[in-house]
Amino acid sequence: MENLEAELKQLIINTLELDGISPPDIDSEAPLFGGGLGLDSIDALELGLALKKKYHIHIDTDSTELLNYFASVKNLADFVSQQQKIL
Image (cartoon, rainbow, N blue to C red; front, side):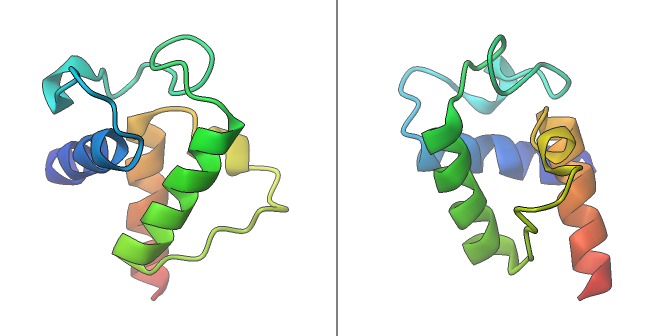
């Protein structure tokens, strides 16, 4: 799971063009939105598209769990892992 978290951190950095940030700078349990990285809704859309493209996963935008999935890198790694098991 640590490898997936590292991959996701790099994906976030590359997708959102977060200059001056490296994967170790991102705490896996820190919030991605608001505090932590301070991402916004546009960032969420870009990140969602990047996740779909890289991991070929389905993201149900009507899911009540969606906010939880994108709450932190750790949660995102759990979500991607679960989705890959379904495929």
